[in-house]
Image (cartoon, rainbow, N blue to C red; front, side, top):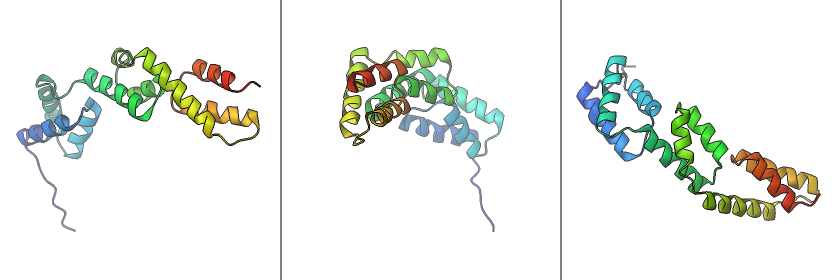
Length: 159
């Protein structure tokens, strides 16, 4: 099988990655992976990443803040899950902390109460211990802090 592989010059790759980063926020790791898939050499990867940073296409703090706001507002994730996902993307603790500060405390508490109540009302389990466990597991999986989760579970289930 004669498979032709597109070969990119550094300038072509810069243009392609500028468009890639302009489309949506990206972290450094995603950009480097994309460049590796394009079969760029390490020296070219470094040059392109520096170019993207200098020209404002790549900014990890901006990415982390956008990611945290999006995952909280759209997927209703808690701080624990957002922090874990950002760590997996290789972001520093300083950047992760800055991103988590973007979440409004009142909105955070309101969303937590809302999804906890909604899940509580949807659980059909008759055994209150099993029902409570389902609620707790659901909220912990979504990344809500354990102290909030257990406090809410105790409030909803008088066991």
